Length: 265
Image 1 (cartoon, rainbow, N blue to C red):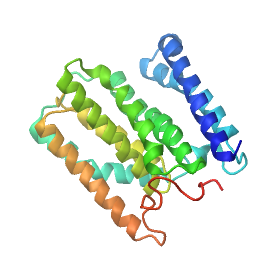
Image 2 (image 1 turned 90 degrees about the horizontal axis):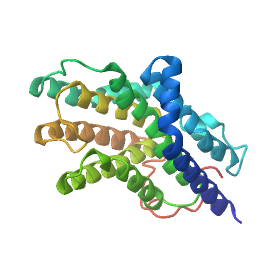
Image 3 (image 1 turned 90 degrees about the vertical axis):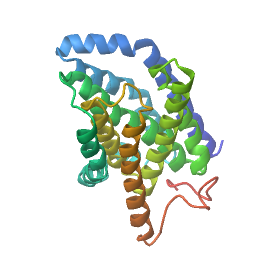
Image 4 (image 1 turned 60 degrees about the vertical axis):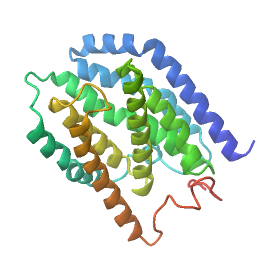
C-alpha cells in the first residue's frame, strides 16, 4: 500500500472511531467531568480533549512518522498573536454593526458563551480543519477540492439540528458548508496556522451570541450584512498577503484537484 492510500485509510478509520465514541459517550463523559470539576464549560472542554485521543493517535501513525511534531501536524505551532490579531481586526464590522443594530443579551450564561465560542472554535477547528481537512490535504496528494468536500459536508450536516424548517435547514446547510470551505482555505493560505481560523471562529460566534441577533447559524438580513463584511475583509487580506509571498497563493489551478507531491514529502 502506497503512502497516500495508507494515510487516507488511517485518517478516515480513526475519524470513524472518534465519531462513534463521540456519539456514544461524549454526553455522559461531559456530565461526569462537569460534576467532578464543578464547572460546565471546563467539563465540556475536558470531555472534548479526551474524545480527540483517537485523532491524535492517527496523526502519529501517518507516514512519514518523523516528519512533524503533533503540534505542527495540527497547525498549533503557528503564531498565536497573528491569529488573534487577524481575527480581532476582521470581526470589527460584526461587533460594531451588531452593537448599533441589536441589543446586548440581558443575562448572559457565561458557560454557554464559553462552550459555543471558545470551545466550539478550538475543537471544531482541530477536528474539521486541522485533522479532517488539513491532514488529508497535507499527507496525501489530493487537491483542495476533494480534500474539502467531505469535511465541509460533514461539518454542515452536524449543524442541521438547529432547525426543522426546510427553508431554514437549507440556509443553515449552505452557511455552514461555505463557512467550512472558507476556514479551510484560510488555514491553507496562512501556512497551516490553525490560530487564524480558530480566532475567526471564536470571535464570529462570540459576536453572534453577545447580541440578540438570531437563534440559528443562518441569521437574518441585517446580521448577514455585517457577517459578509467580516468575510470580505478576511478574504481580501488573505489574497493580498498571499500574492506578496514568493510562492504566491497556495490554492491555485495546480492544487485544486491533485498535487504532484504531498506537503509531508
